Image (cartoon, rainbow, N blue to C red; front, side, top):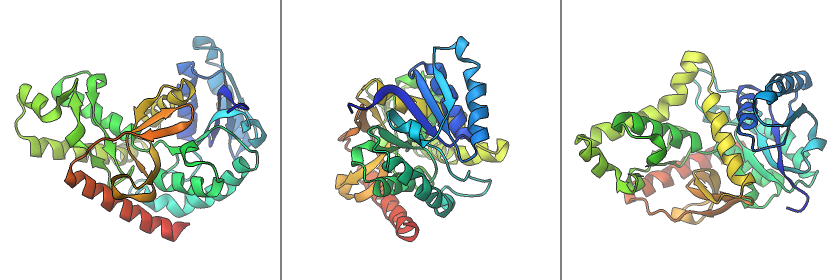
Length: 315
């Protein structure tokens, strides 16, 4: 990554998600330069100006609207461009529209010989991550998706509310598709190393089946609920994008449930799904070898089958 400015990010797509992500990244202070690119140049310019005006309250950051020529040395190229999910619409309903949009974006990145990491945020994120990987010709570790990082944060939040415990002390992941077939990986969930069910009982909760279903369903339906109430989700995903970008820029080797290419893991091959993965300067460095139970493995496999069918139709 000799030609990469490790403190530079590019955001392609300046809608709600792209703009909220840039705003969160600016406040984090992790980047010294962020370029915004959008099919609507005036939109990119307006968002860049609006966010840049808050720099004096955060950390010095050069935030500006640019073109694809400005992405060449970016450490992280974030793609949020795409049609937004509408009330009543599933993430998979978006696939044909957004694959078409990616067919115009990815070649622009490829021909500039970028050496940074592509981070796909647009939905359906797993399918678009796979599409970006195939269209770009980049090595698999340098094309990742935001995956279930936000879903897992929602999972941890709901568990923290249920158990009255700091969400940061909860290790719990949503795996598989970022969507309707996602799986709450209860078998590896723990609080400070204590298995989740043991901790629940310590807090006086014995009805595990009822509560696990309630919490998992609430996580899965969170986006639909927010979209129904306010039209779009963007703050949570903006903070999730910032968290992933931080792990790359700081070479943290953080374990995050990003969407990445599976090559035989859990019996699944040639599909991008969200699995806890070691994330550092090179992107997806290795999939963490968690041992989920048989029921979760089967659900993960079924999730992959469903996504493969959609990919075959769309690509």
